[in-house]
Amino acid sequence: MRKLSIFTFIFLSILGISRYAVSSLSPTGHIPYKTFIYGADNVELRKVLRAASKLVAGQSSPPQTINDLKQLAVQDMKNLQEVLAAEGYYDAELDFFVDIQTIPVTVYLKINLGKIYTLGAFKIKSDPPNDPQMPLISKNVTRIGVQIGMPAKKDKIKDVIDKIMKFLKDRGKPLAKVKEDRMVIDRSAKEMHVALLIESGPLVRFGNIVIENSGGVKPEFIQSKLAWKKGDIYNREKIIETIQTLHNSRLFKSISITNAETTNEQGFMDVYINLRGSTPSEYSIGSSYQPKEGMIQEIAWEGRNLMDSGEIFNLSTHLGSKQKTGELVLLLPDFQKINLDFTTKIRAGKWDYPAFEKQGVEMKSSVTYPLFGPQFVGDAGVSFEINNINRNGEKEDTYRILGLPFGVKYSDVEGGWQPRKGFRVKARVYPYATVFGKMKSHIRLHLNPELFYPLTKTEDVVATAWMDAGFAPGAGKSVVPSHKLYYPGGAGSIRGYKFQMAGPLDSSKNPKGGRSMLLLGVGVNNYVTDSLTLSGYMDWGTAYDRQYSDFSNGLLWGIGAGIKYHTIYGDLSFDIASPVNRRSEDSAIEFYLSFNVKPYEVYQGLYKTFTPPAIQNNGEI
Image 1 (cartoon, rainbow, N blue to C red):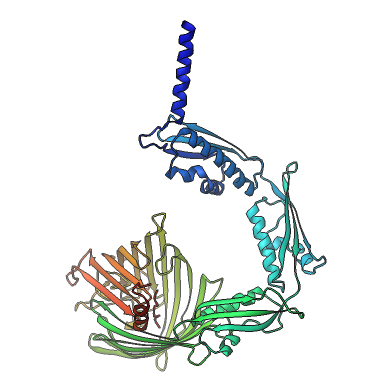
Image 2: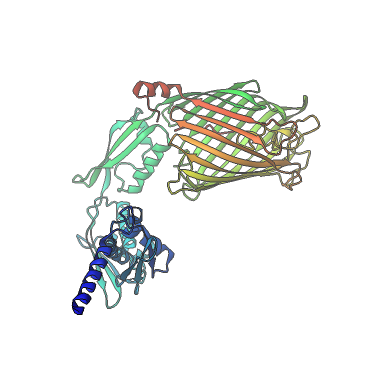
């Protein structure tokens, strides 16, 4: 009887444990859990493992039972075994432990990496044999990333193979392909041996150009932009260069350049070009308002390729109670060299600013070119102006000023018109000298960095920070003309203050300006949709009557919020801000408004659809 009781107790205990193992530990019917992966000390490797882990991914939708969780862990070990092998750890061992005593349940995934395998051999052969390119590649494998003894990572090997194929396609072998790739693991030596058999194909030359769709431009214009001519040895880089040149012309919405899959008996391969043209001319109307500057209306027109050489003309006029000006811009993309753009700007008119009145003509010609890739762009030019300057109702002087401005711009920002993350900075130098009279010269330096940092995983909420600093080293008080001083305040500067009014004022409450300036700002942008952005911000800054900012004046502080709506039909921007350290001449609230409309795009859009789908900024001289 006693034995029966003991067996009964054991049976019921086992039954209870079994039921517990397959039952839910949560009233919701799921097993919430967290995952710890340990044994991989390398930070980057841990990131790779967590990104590939099914356990980590499954935390958001947990299983219903402990057994299901264990099965998921078993699957994850097999999955991560493959991931570790791809990273060169072919002897890695994995194990797991589920701790049901914690809330939530904890899954410990232990990894014993073992020794990382290295590349022991890398050989290349061609089919047919004796292709002259193969010895050249073999002698220069270190240039494409092959080092005997490097970690045997599969993605690295794949990258090397891609570079080899690119090397061949850039040297007349567009039909080359990998016929066989062997990756042999030597477990005794802890090495990977790689052998490639490449079917290199015939030597190919550019053949006939077949323009299937010209995009509305003359075939002669397209021919003039080609980076090759018929008979040249095929080079994939030449096609990429041509696509870039056609893109820079801003004449096409889409560009497609493809080649035939075969060659003729002479080894020539035809090339097919298919272009979809953009609107050859574009009109826009707009208006902007900010305190002290008033309402300014803008009418602009842009024409492209009017003389069949890819040139871009832009004509605009700004009309308001404080400004009556006109501007002409001529842009020649790829001037004598791909990505070398030549721009000439001329503007004339009258500006009635709070700090001064200006009337005259200004001209500038400049070139821009990427110095170290597309992210790092340099520019240099020459400018000349003739301006009559009145200050406080009296004529100051007629200035004839020659300038040689130059600068650099670096940008590593993602998100287009809605920057999601990254950094960009502009640095410019403005050497000026008065001519046709007593010569006076001075230099202005300008630095403008911006930072964007996402606060959410979806990157729809982004923190921003910026600085705008200007200096005039070596410039005496009587050297810098009034219109070359710094006058912070208003939109694009210290919001919450009137245009040009966020600096020291004279006894008549007019802006004094400064030879130096320091502006700072932080904010948060909420990208509600692809077209709508809400923002909040704080701005600080002022100007100084010294060559460098010496903080002799306290920084003025503004706080505000804004909304931007942006489509291909135009865009709207509205900001409302208030000065924190308010002075007697400052208003409690200021607002800034601007909108731009493209009538043709609106007409075209309303004709096709009522759903608005990007915008264009006019540069300053």
